Length: 139
Image 1: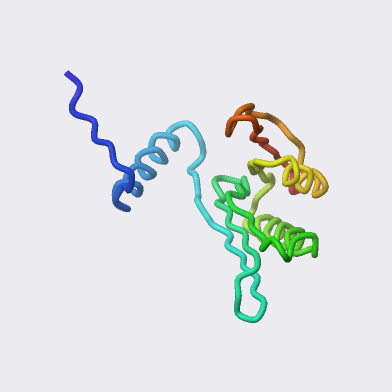
Image 2: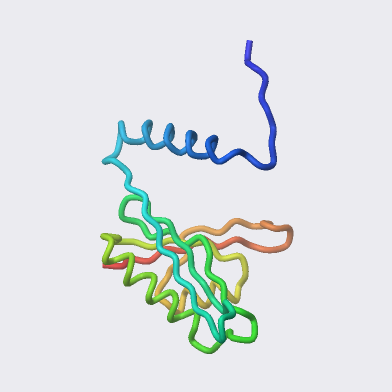
């Protein structure tokens, strides 16, 4: 009989740490040990956050999970600067590839201009839109 499955919207940090530890342990049987690193960049104007980038580094992949630029600061080069700085940091940490998701055609086009290529699309995520998956070789 299967034990009871608990559902929670806010898992405790120790659960997430344990889950990641178990997955890494399992994967390490098949792949070289996965090292996890992070790259976090921020840019401020008059002590107000106007842009930021957060990425995780599993193995030699730079996985950008968040890039944001304040709406009134867009098209000023901040996004490009954050991406270039992030990619440079990733290469210093041994990354050879980058990957990310884009949820609008505008952001997809931005990443394509930076040398990313689409390798997959997911229709209707959310309904009526596409989610784009992009990658780039860094070195």
